[in-house]
Image (cartoon, rainbow, N blue to C red; front, side):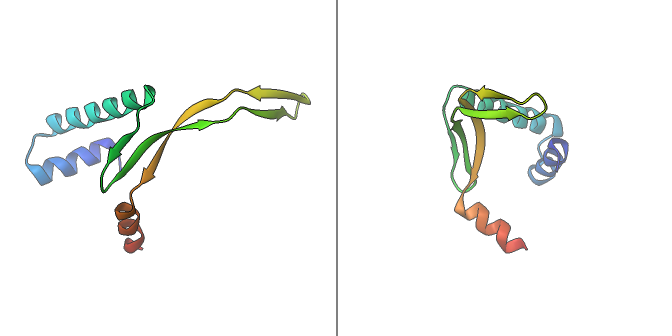
Length: 93
């Protein structure tokens, strides 16, 4: 499902015009990205959590040149679904 399809579904369900729904969705994504960029997790009760995970420094190999590289520690965004969310998805199968 794309952002446009999500906006259409929300517009149909709420009666709000699609451009307003798209603006809200885009602003939501901006707030989540900004929060994660500042190291803050975002918790949505009953849905899940957008969290920042830290990957440790590791050594990798470039097989073609037979050399090793050091990949520095870095943060990555992740999503952890709530139990209610997981149970709903598993029930659909």
